[in-house]
Length: 228
Image 1 (cartoon, rainbow, N blue to C red):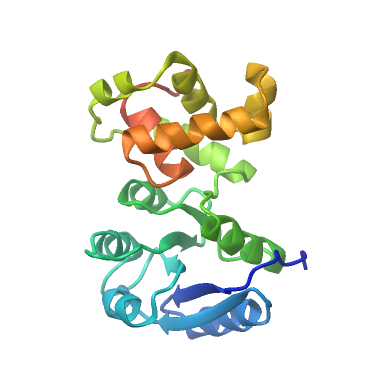
Image 2: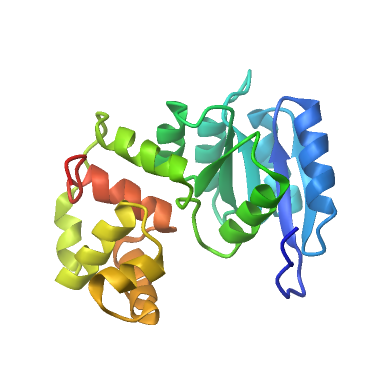
């Protein structure tokens, strides 16, 4: 296991999956981490909003396919809840090219992870998303982004991008290809801290939650296309 980051307050996690074995297995694994605590589990998306009110999770591991209310609609419901510091959502899926992942990202999920991911990857995913980042690093995500770019989608108003500087637009393009801050810094010949500053400004100016939403906006506004 990776060393846990120093933290006084543990990351509060909710697990939503219609398979009891998944809930129990992931729950036991995460509860064994010194910086993570599982505060709730649910077997269907219908239970999620009420549990969020009661337990205030930081991160939700959300199954994408559930019988009554699926993970996409449950994610939308959670992020639409008023008066809350909304939890971040990691979508759980069995397939790396699951068509519903695209809709989940549009709905506001911070990324996804395969159910057969290693224990280290699962724990790392929770820590990364709780820290405000998004799950866009794995090689499988590059395939998803490429596929996503070719799909029809509601076009976001490109006019809003006019608030960004040319440098910020350049950073946004690089993020949309899945590059890390360090890779972007090397590409643009600037410091990693400068890239972080640009990312913060992009999020603030466009009213976005995280890097995943930057990717979605870059494609849906036409800033980046599949041919890039």
